Image 1 (cartoon, protein in one colour):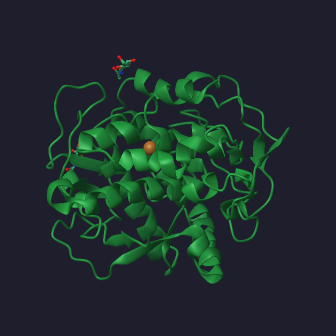
Image 2 (image 1 turned 45 degrees about the vertical axis):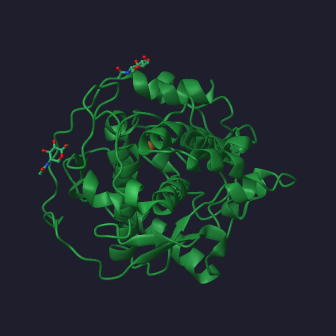
Length: 341
Ligand SMILES: *[C@@H]1O[C@H](CO)[C@@H](O)[C@H](O)[C@H]1NC(C)=O
Ligand SMILES: *[C@@H]1O[C@H](CO)[C@@H](O)[C@H](O)[C@H]1NC(C)=O
Ligand SMILES: [Cu+2]
């Protein structure tokens, strides 16, 4: 099955209705907050080794912590709760105007959880896959991101994972899927969500492939950065059909990362999306006057209503609603972050 058929299948399904409550343990919206600090996002290989280990330990901590919203039976850990929110909202947050804003704030909430719930004080990581893709004589699987100690473990191993019954279409995984990762800090990690919308306990499934290397190279990013307005940028980044770098980053890791619903089973999801966000932020900063608050696109898939800055984004079980306006400036509250280029 191709990347397109897996990822485009998200377009075919109807909207999910979210009707769960925000757990009372989460604080009410703080709409006028200020940043106590500006947090730096750093490329994984530019982080100090101690920070790499600290980051990994914090992700493992999230995987051990219980979920906060006890009304949802399927996520079995705080980590899975982030994945679950993405699974449940998939159709509402892809191929829509707020694809980038929604994923930016998901990254903020994840970074906050690593810090506030698991005590991680170092920089938040992104994965600049252009560094691997441009390095044409080195296999992608040799990237430091896949290191078994100072990274997220390596490729899936054939013969270690069998798709559950009914795992086709949106619940499927691509033919390149190899199997469970068998080394590194997440070799024993389990998720109860996925593939797709299925609820099955399983390992982190990968299938690293060279097939989409070109779509995450610097040349591909440069095309995205040439977008003249948000609409062009969004269509480049949010469309799996025309947009190289989003699908490409999911594609080179393969396995569950190639399922648009349950990709968050793999901790690399957050480093990949942080890099997409970095491309958007870089584009915004190149012309703040016209781009910082430029937003467009439908509010629902294929819809005719255009999104406004006042549009509310929701993050069930993760945090209070925010408006698109509030996430446009990543360096302002509630984002409070910037990128180390
Ligand atoms: C959106 O439009 C595409 C292309 O026409 C179509 O394939 C898809 O089914 C539509 N999705 C929804 C949710 O209506
Ligand atoms: C949060 O946003 C969602 C989606 O727009 C909306 O349905 C819900 O009512 C909002 N919740 C609150 C508390 O404003
Ligand atoms: Cu997503």
